[in-house]
Length: 369
Image 1 (tube, helix red, strand yellow):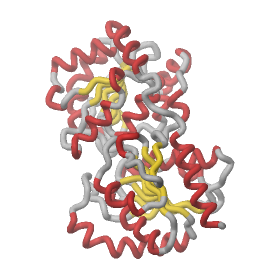
Image 2 (cartoon, helix red, strand yellow):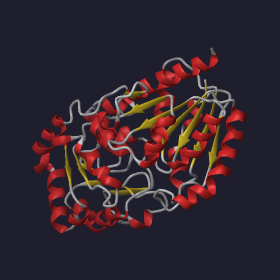
Image 3 (cartoon, helix red, strand yellow):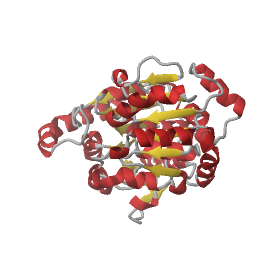
Image 4 (spheres, one colour):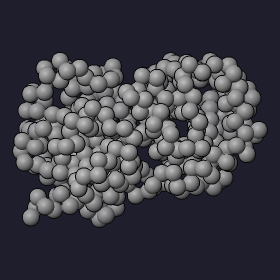
């Protein structure tokens, strides 16, 4: 197979693509060549780690565009209009160079030019929607694809080309860790092997609101006996709490399944990939949706986990909530965490990556024939 992936800007657009590559490999298929079109944001450098191991001898190439602003958010209509034609020509050259058979759009406007370029070359396209509410890019591009894969029923339009597959996730997320394994993971992180672990996830790019809140209360939490693992985001370690025993700030968490398996509670933004990963791991969570998420889609993402998660508005992040969080994460919250974990059983379907991989194989075989 010679694949093209289009989508970036956040880890939530990169991680599903990596899971699909793993699923292709697990089917005893081979990705001989890959070109991945991204936006060029810094977080992609971290999120794309390990792709080399999933691609065959043909290797892979990353082609970065400027469709999505590096500061975050969707591009303006003016930005799209000014950059679209040059990016289409860049994408056409890359697709021809790699002799791509199929293109998979992973979300975001960095997929716009590559998808249009692929269609102009007669290359079949597929689209993956991982959110619970379709964004502008999906509404614009999905109708132009031969197959559309949905992580959740809420975005499926019930058309023949649309298939609800579940979120593409690592299979390890669905596997419960032993107490021994949990302690080993904490030891590797340099944390107390027996203390409860709170993991703070602001999304792949970090979140100022969660960073500020965590930095303000980390001393209180670790002083009360908690471990705190704080993902601050690329280039944002200065927003963390500094050097504290029992507290670890990192830019990016690469081995998400291991961290979630060792944690007792998560405090997180409610991006689609984060919600799906936490739900699959059956980890009790408190979600703080981005206050400016379009159409409140992060609130809808968090609602997927039902009683297994709580939702708190960012305006509520203060001393009272910090004390409540400490209670839930500690020994006094054990019974409530068990109840939340039990509520997460079956909340997230498995096998999504394999279903997407099967669809891409089908499209590539049609091209070969």
